[in-house]
Length: 167
Image 1 (tube, rainbow, N blue to C red):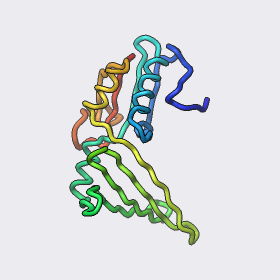
Image 2 (image 1 turned 135 degrees about the vertical axis):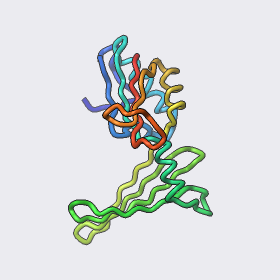
Image 3 (image 1 turned 180 degrees about the horizontal axis):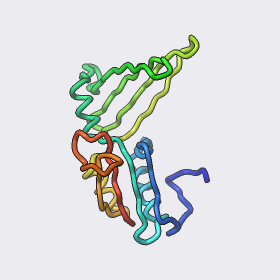
């Protein structure tokens, strides 16, 4: 089924719902993200499990502070990266982080067969206390937080923030 995650038609239907690879936080309005959590809680059966996998905002912030620089005009933290993929393709990424809104924008550019291409993402980073609060306010109760898929403790330098919650 394809649809809008802000408007799920299910009530107490699922034993588990999984959100992988930072697929949460892309709506421009935080109220839409809250609505998603509310819809997930409604779609889960009693004691149903919600697993969400996100970038660790503490790690993103640390890397931006360490390797980035403040833009004097906008005040945003900016960092440039250049990666060579296994295919030989070179991708340049301009990362910007707005500390007031915690929006992390990645603008990737590359040349493919002589043609310039680009791709942009804009995601809201939620701290663990903030996400926990939003979940609790919307019918989800956090049980465990990990820093990777092997179950390592969640720490500031972990690459991921994986949260297990129940309805």
